[in-house]
Image (tube, rainbow, N blue to C red; front, side):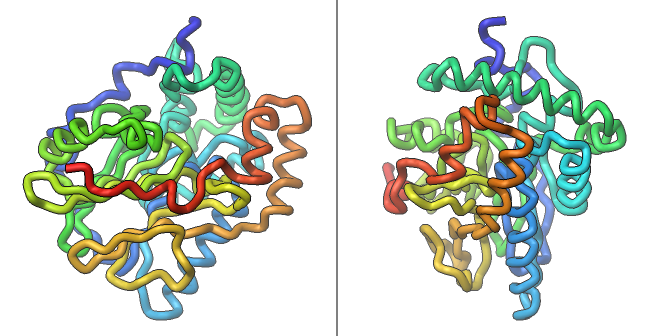
Length: 317
């Protein structure tokens, strides 16, 4: 039981070589990959507004949610509203949704937190998922829809093979594509994963901090984009969320970071949701002293310690 929240079920694991055996063609002009919405319905409002603005300019936008779109939405109304809207788009599982659809004994939140994460954070996350599971149990139709979602998707977009993950190429809750892993040097794993999957780009979330990486594998340019969180601040003094935008066109708003490969722009684009209104809703659900308030409210107020330059990692090969 002491490992709840630090270990994960065997069902979370998969073989990297299997991830792109089947790929789906995308006909859209723009992909928004949205990880870590965390139940922030006002961030969802803003993302949908951004997509509508692109479409008014003649660009078709496909919204792709790659997990953890639930977390803070612990009221029946908010839980249903977030899920009904998200499930109308292209969706894959996060560990949160996996544990809402089919709770795994001993998994806790299913986050597979590394040892550098404080135990208090782990225990609070386990209690948050328990509360959210209680809400989800009143919505069996949504639980059934979540249970049918895939753990990953491989998309053909603009001639590139884009692997959309939640964690990393070995596990739904893996931390191999976390900011901390890039900072420590994960070039050997990256080379192996790109070689085994055949992907041109990996787009992920789960680990809460953003990353934009480029490098060469077998003399081919490869990319990793981790958007951190769409529903929380990601940078120092900046409460905006981030999503991954992929398109041949440049974003109309200034990205935090961007790279161009074979005619496609991979950008970390800010989500400027109504911050004050979201804090008001958050404080009702998670008042002072609650688990989510202790773990997340400071981040909602002021972001993280990262500067924009901290999220970009150069070639290591």
